Image 1 (cartoon, rainbow, N blue to C red):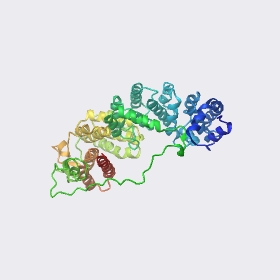
Image 2: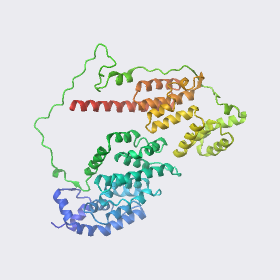
Image 3: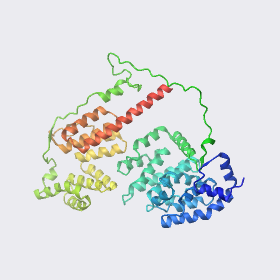
Image 4: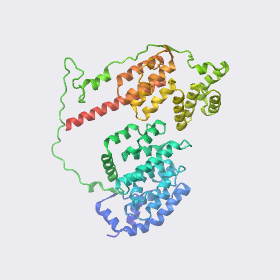
Length: 498
């Protein structure tokens, strides 16, 4: 059956959005007529979108792209390349919210015949919209899922891109770095582990977008499993949607089977450490709920001072006027980080042995969202002053972001309280205590040892009930507890179903 101009117009107008198998077959049989109809139209609409930020018929452009990719029009790859030079806002305004990050990668992957070399310049163009760059990167990942590109070709390229992001002097951060981590996760790119860890460690990944744990879980899952999951993801994408009634439906039995009954455990008279835990996780009690419920009280065999303590010998040898100026940087950094950096650098040249100057510089770069410079200062601080508490705390948090929990505690010399680190000191400033116990609380959140977290949280609240650090710990602990409960429930469900 011939496809008429009316049929094509109905598709481009969005009137006909679901297709039976026969209709899809008919479209492919008439691909030459469809290609002829789309060629000049798509060229003009894409040109307008790139040059003017808008096009005359957004709906037709959207369906034109999908129809052109479906019938494998030879010019579609070029039109998609041209589209990438429009802004994300223009693309999404024309073709729907999240088109650039949601559908564009799939269309690219289907339109390309394994021709990913031509996409590389777009990915590497730092001036291009980062969401479009991320979409181009995702398209290569989907090409792997379609079998058009080898995983072994892509991983070294991803590794080079990570290196470039880490070395970028312009301090750009954002969605592109997240896309890099995502492709490494989906391809189970163990070769990129150090680079991925460093992206997280240097504050270059938004933790609300992804996490180092997802990447590490993919490595545990294994290459074959990850690639199979990627292939299934690509298969689920439909360039043209199937008609609902055209899809085969599963036969339903007359009777709905009852869910399996779960037998409730009865609490024994005395719960032994090696007994199966009552929550049904299958773990021993000592390895499960015992460590979450046993009260933990951190040792505080020291006094807490709210008055300034000067324990740094290099700082104490400064003239009083200079000490006052250095101390003034604490408030100046918060009020005007950009304007204070030059003064801090000047004083670092004069007094390179005063660690708090490095701490102020680190804070200024963090406030200005210059993560690479902040990370460089942190590493320099730890190298020069291996016993400086605030440097050790930040270094521990750096390893936590990298997903290296053991190394995070090594950075604090496995200390559980401040006198473990500094046995000769009997007094610590409140900010020292807060910073140290905040780092330990974050460590035990990651380890899911919530009794320790509660102990440190209670102490943080006692020092300062309005502490932002305490609020952050409480929020993260609540989130981690919820995730832990959900994970244990799924494990129990899997056991009951097996």
